[in-house]
Amino acid sequence: MEYRLDKRSGNELSVLGMGCMRLPRKGTGIDMQLTELILLEAFERGVNYFDTAYSYGGSEEALGEIVERNNLRQHVYIASKLPHGKCRTIDDVERLFTTSLERLRTDYLDYYLIHNIVMASQWQRLVDLGIDEWIAQKKESGAIRRIGFSFHGGMAEFRELLDAYDWDLVQIQYNYVNEHYQAGREGSELAASRGIPVVVMEPLLGGRLAAGLPEGTVHAFESAVPGRSPASWGLRWLFDQPQVTVVLSGMNSTEMLHENIDTAASTAPGSMTESERVAIREAKAAFEESFKVPCTGCNYCMPCSKGISIPSLFAAYNESFSLGWRTGFFHYMMSVGVTSGAPRLATSCVNCGACVKKCPQHINVPERMADVAHRLQPPGVNTALKLANPILSHW
Ligand code: SF4
Ligand code: SF4
Image 1 (cartoon, rainbow, N blue to C red):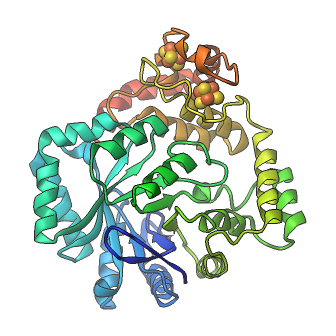
Image 2: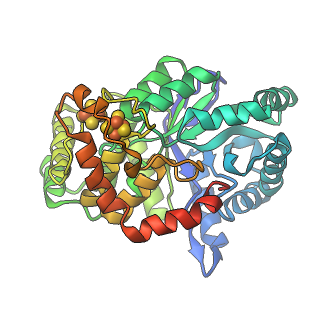
């Protein structure tokens, strides 16, 4: 296993981290026997970073039980996350944090992340509740070793967030298809340039980059290195980048674990060959052929006066064709900030035209926003949004 340095803490983190969002399930609960087998094998093969969250139904409890039973607490780094939408007062923050500690059977977290921020105003709301003083107290007592945030907004918001606080770690969605989506490459390099460790989530888009790829993508990979799996290609692309500290993978079988560990062990930063890079570019190009809006994610059109994350919405729209409607829809919902209580939807566009003048690709943004809304906000979804918004805003 390769370890990468968290320069802020001095922690040596395994470049392959265990994502505990999708632990193996049995019936209605977590398959504890299989989960324990995988987690222990991961640990024995050198994985030392385990990522969970208050909102990952049953994950904190399972991880806590397994870590305690096997006396692993001193040997692993545990990251969990605060569901900030549930916090109306600082007492809520304290209660949710204490619950996470209890579930994880520990009295400290190595990393505590504000979960799923999409815009800087969400962090500001927590600051108004007094969270910076609360964090200072927790760090002082040792209950929180390092603080960070996980992110699903656009690059402009990411930059704003980085400037807003002295973060110890960021967690972003990043993979070769999403190179310029959300924080993407630019965000990962910006965070790393400030000495902030970068944890990558969704390296294979929830498995979409492991199976069911377009024919051209598979052909590009197979022509370059026959027999190497698409999952290995996807992870290799990330391990190769020095600004990436940890890549989280939700490994729910020992086969997957073994393959990912082998990939991690054989990919040092900068080790990809030129022919491998060409293959990735060709694979990505085949993927992008199904893109409907030629948005490069350059962000030149931002900010939008209505707060719409234009490149993220176009990326989600394109994904709804290349990766399937459900994936595109899910990313659309994340990108509009559906859990924020004030989502900035494609239908929020007022056709002011300001963005059009700035777009180097000459995209008629408002016209294409109407396409996005037509595809990802059909009438049934609009009704569901209206009904669900009061509930979602508390997530
Ligand atoms: S045209 Fe629409 S998307 Fe573009 S800046 Fe105006 S409101 Fe935002
Ligand atoms: S300026 Fe154009 S290409 Fe760049 S992010 Fe905006 S819409 Fe996409």
